Amino acid sequence: MRSVGSIDLSRIGFAGVGIMGGPMVERLLDQGRSVVVWNRTADKARAVADKHDAAEVVSRPADVARTDVVILMLLDTAACERALLAPDGVLQADRTPKVVINMSTIDPLSSARLRDACAGRGCDYVAAPVSGSTLFAREGKLTVMASGKADAFEAVRPLLEDLGQRVLYVGEAVEGHLLKLAVTMVIGAYSSAMYEAITLCRKGGVDVATYLNILNESVIGTAYSRYKTPALTAHNYAPAHSVSGLAKDYDLMDLTAQSLGTPIPITALVRQQLRAAVGRGDGALDMTVLLEQYLRDAGAGTS
Image (cartoon, rainbow, N blue to C red; front, side, top):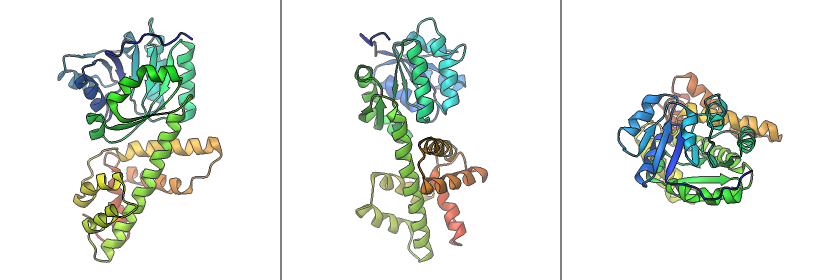
């Protein structure tokens, strides 16, 4: 495999301009980088490019390979495979990038297969999924969990630091994708516990704002509970991360746990709650919409 060597971080290829990818592209542009953008739905890519002279929209994922570094921020494993391996994919281009950074949320087994495919074309692979909301993405405040060859990580670290307030190097393989799922597992369990507690308080005559104020000031108050407080108080379910997206992530947790022989009973319960919410037609909303079902099940009304 070729050495990473000198690498141009001024011009970046980016595949995937969705709910997280769009703000991330804008962040890179605001940081003075030019970005070559591909998205399956071209109109989304053009909407970003229309606001920035330094953004170029291309029609094939292979065209983003004209850069030294390509970032993937795509919906799922199938989308990553399509962007990299399809006949017009990044790894089929005449010139492949020096580094592919996969910031999508996928399972570690699939990530390892993509890493090996990149290696077969002489391209380094950094698994670097993120934790954080769309607002964090726009402001460069994401947490990045990066893994891969140490020299490849160091080569792209300045780029990751444009996107993340905390950039953590977590291993030489694809540990980043395992850790992303593990972090999301706790978010789901914590959220469900909050919704149960809110419902209990509501039945007992204590309003949401009062309970969350106490929770946030307690030893188990978190940055996450404080971040979610305004939305939960206002029953605002605009998606920071959609129910359908989380349901996909929870399917990946189940797949990963099966491959490792690990029981995950609490996660399994949250997975079923998310699948039920998708079935109710709430897939496009934020996970906080699960609170409504807790309230209905307890006969505590809804918002």
